[in-house]
Length: 420
Ligand code: ATP
Ligand code: MG
Image (cartoon, rainbow, N blue to C red):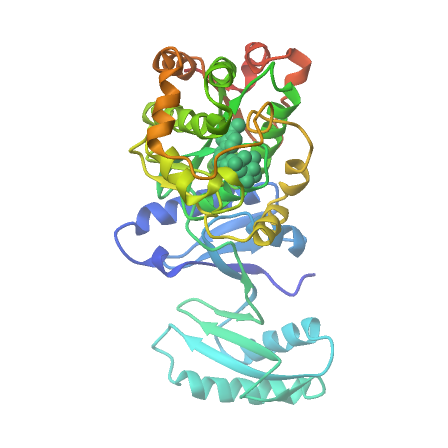
């Protein structure tokens, strides 16, 4: 029998206030349900609190599930008790006996939301401490200044909750409450992390990937699908939409017409032009990228300036000022790292000249683009030909079984696609 019978779940302060409260709360409840549906737990809703009632479930499994729910500030495994002091003391003793493994200093901290109780929080703390210590003085001694263990008691209208510590959740807001954004996702380390950070902040993220099959391998597109599977764990309904843009034709045009030092710059300008059009079509309000200042030649401020000039849609760069080591840490946390480091070339690494300009400017980019034949038309064409995959954590999508291009494979995969 586990010590605990509930999990107290705390969303951020904003959850409880303001006019978005209802939307936030509903989304939070939906996320909790979807992420715990494989577990033997039941959701208990109170006006200001959410609980999971635990039957006989492995606490680690619950903890893991909650660590995937965006918006959870923290959570605690709690023992619920009748409100009379004798019952609270008995239950508290049980918690301490089960959970405190070696002699520790401790204090009791009481919070009461039931204001009809005859004692103040402080008085209750004293009454409870006395009763508890009588039984477990061999395990704990009181140190109110700097205790190793704090036993929390919260007394509300219906019950008392007893718990030791709180675990930190993902924080942020429930995914989706902030509106929709399109993540430019490559097979690299950065963009999945950028997408995750945006999701954690409440953005409903859809992916857009520029794939150049058959010039690039079908495996490089498969890699992005594998990354999308990992991201779908955090998504609403655990569904991640991935728009695959057939970039081959435009890519060839760029390589054929643009001077080597501007290939990367122009390619990215094309990315943004296509992305902005797709964003309009998919009702997304912002674009998101994995760019980080200075990381590579194309991510200098001059580059960003020149590239961004082609769009008016806001561009969010969650990793702009993050160190690579911290990005890697996050990519391990969301389990994308091992996929990202697989060595398949995508359109940004294949046939790209090494002498890219680190100081490109808009004027020269425009002059270069004049040599391209009707790129506007190609853009409209590839936006229309974009294929949308709906990806879940267990999606069984194997592109390479169906051809050498994503378009061929897509045609054979009607289970996982969405109409245009
Ligand atoms: P990442 O690790 O995300 O690939 P990176 O440091 O390798 O980033 P670049 O390859 O210069 O950087 O790409 C910068 C950003 O451009 C990426 O983070 C991503 O948002 C976007 N991007 C690059 N290639 C593609 C692609 N083929 N499809 C969609 N977006 C892309
Ligand atoms: Mg990359």
